[in-house]
Length: 312
Image (cartoon, rainbow, N blue to C red; front, side, top):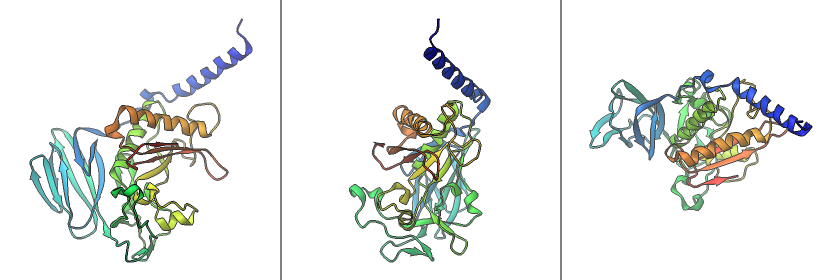
């Protein structure tokens, strides 16, 4: 005879299997939006159909690819291993399209609005705050930004990658004169797309990840009680995310146990750790952090591109 504990265990497994069967990979039919060639820019190699990068006005951007390219704005020249594009002097959004055979991809280039960290703590009336005088661990990636993406509400609809929009990463500050300022690093977008793809392959059907917190200005970061000056959120290289297929603004019950708690965030983090081991090209070194629910919000996972491994 089967004991009561054993029977309960079997029933628990059956419930989880039933839950997962409702979200089978076949039913998900997720399109990862990848193409048959790659582009490499800012040390990020991508086969996504859409990727976004940032440059300063007049900066030359080197793009390594075997695909042909065309653009309506900026100086584009062929090189031995790809293309070089010179940014216009006017900040804004520009696009280069790549083609190889029947495959097409798009590079969105945000020319930044310049900012001098030594000249003050605002940009066109928008409160930025102060970055640390000395970069964390003397890493250049922690130097104060030299510019920010200037975005009105219409620009926030722009897809910065196949399944994420610019608006998902804005700082939770009030707009000033109809604009907000932010950063979104291409390596971070690469990781979020790869994580989203892996989640769907697990049978959890979802079109994007809910970004609870993306970019933060140092001013906003301090206003919420965070005193760190090395958070990757300050540089557009971090996102606090969770799976929210039902759109209720909280983490879904990923493990099917009838509860929504840290275990669901841990499951998402374990998927991320698996990618880090198996696909380092799509997973630049960084942090993976698991956060439990509290009285204000549900559990979530922190993903960043700090340049070295960190798990918590």
